[in-house]
Image (tube, rainbow, N blue to C red):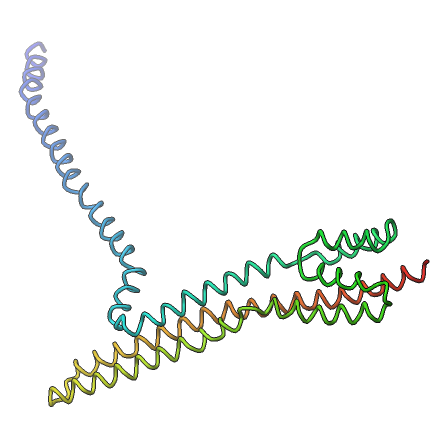
Amino acid sequence: MKKLIALFMLSGILMFPVITKAQDAEEAAEETTEVVEAPAAPAVVDDEIMDEEKGFHQIIKEKFIEGDPTFMSPVLICLILGLAVALERIITLNLSTTNTKKLLAKVEEALEQGGIEAAKDVTKNTKGPVASIFTQGLMRYSEGIEMVEKSIIAYGSVEMGRLEKGLVWISLFISLAPMLGFMGTVIGMIGAFDAIEAAGDISPSLVAGGIKIALLTTVAGLIVAIILQLFYNYCVAKIDSLVNDMEDASITLVDILVKHKLSK
């Protein structure tokens, strides 16, 4: 029994270095695998990041250069100027929006408490075309309701002209951008045919490359026109909404003034 125990102990002592070496080898292999695999993941991530960064902006830059900056630059200028005018109009129109129901309630309350002068103070201290029209109508109250209506109609036309200010420039850039694009395409096609004539042979690569470069200006012009058209339609819809509010509020104001005059 003692010999058997001694044999087990001896075999354990002899096997321990082997097991230790095997474990060390496995750990070393795992560390090597981790070291080898660890850089691989960031490399893939870096490639994906590079692809994403190259995606949109890099493609735009490449297409701009391929389309010849001489013809692409005027189209880009149309986009910049058109967006500048459109954003200015959008900000102005949003600032011109007035809560007409609240304003009419204040005017009616002022008429009951302080008369016409109090109502004028309310409209003068309120911003927007609706309040300006109300002010002009209240200033003609002493001349009769008919003069109030005429004043509101006349000054409403003036305010409508102010609201539509700048839209003609957006419309110009919408029409001009595709025209410039078409002009660049035509000039590019002429250059492609000149290259074919100079080469004395129709090379598919030469023709395809020239046509591709020529058509890029047309694509750019159409994209600019589409973008500006969206902003233009938004401005037109906003102006229509403001004009409808002015008309409805003006009719209500006249009714309030008639009621105030009859109550005296």
